Image 1 (cartoon, rainbow, N blue to C red):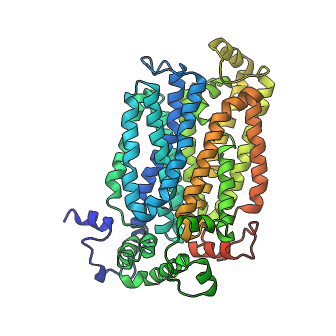
Image 2: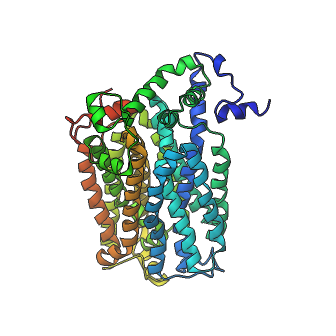
Image 3: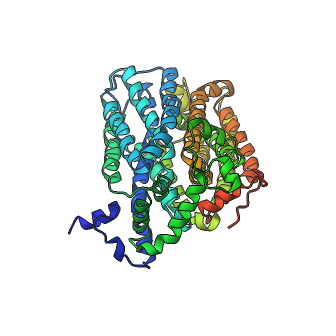
Length: 525
């Protein structure tokens, strides 16, 4: 009998589907959706670990974190270290290309299960590396895995009801920032090799959990597994009777038939008996307005995310903080940044239903460019001409600390504001929208393509940070990111739609209307 609840959670074995209640409490209806989302939350946590690990590896291998890594045998120049920090981003497109094939052939559940073995291998490998080649292998493995997950997060959007979808997606952001916080916190008193061993626990846990969750009903319906889709919905809606979920199941069937239709059959309203779309057909579908409009929006959002400040600076955040003359330990501040990231995503979960995704994004972008300009002005006032975070010695840093005096608290406040604003909207909302605004027919494929774009943007932003810093100086490059944020804010006023409390069907109908331009941001209920 002890195993029965576990079996209920896993998708209904042991549950008499013919005797489920017609009505259940709100708690019982939401509980299985939350439990099923846990796998993607753990995936998100692991993604946060991947994004943050270079922040503690790079200072160690360039000789800037000797107190926590006194026996470090692996050493690199800052130039090589910048390649290492950027490497996982440039390799991620390979994972992005493979991601839709895993998600569409194996399903969201089993694709998540199999891909979790990759980071488990990488986290165990990294603490044992003794050469540049092997650390490259570890970072490449993490990068490929990050790409493989690009179209798996749509599981959250596909299993959750419209009324709670925004909150459930916001919790994925909490998980990701928790992963970043874990690396910052552990990295403040452990070596990066010890932290890597601890990180291995996360994907191993996800391998065990993923075996228990139900498959996405939308995926099952699209693959003509209607009986399994019905049982999956019964579990996800609170272990209810088939009568309760029949309207939703019928809606999924209609959406599946529409999305499976070729262009000609869709226009004529006829049932399509043509073979499934090929890769060429999917690429061609991107040129259609219903796909091109959301694709353009997501692409611009990802570009702004990577070039608006914190994301480009994150691998080098410890020397950047030191270069600003902040009185507190850089490792302590990174922990504060991690805590702020978690708090920001908790704020999204609490406010997204009332404020909406659009306003949260725009407000966060304002805070982001204000903090960028604040840091830039601070630098122009107190730093010597051409000041950078690279190539400075202890005497230079001590001189800066004496120069800035109590004004270092202003710089600290700007970094904290930037982290909060980036986390609450600039880096979170694009992922929310990615799983919502693409048409179901090409959702996994488009998510993988935009994920690939995002990683290419991240590679360019990370790899060019030191170059921009040498050309423009440290305050100059941060001011440059502020200008990009201002331009992005103006553009998104006219482009970003509000999807909160809209069903996926309503969103798809909005973008399918060729009479609406990309600047038509009102999605009708």
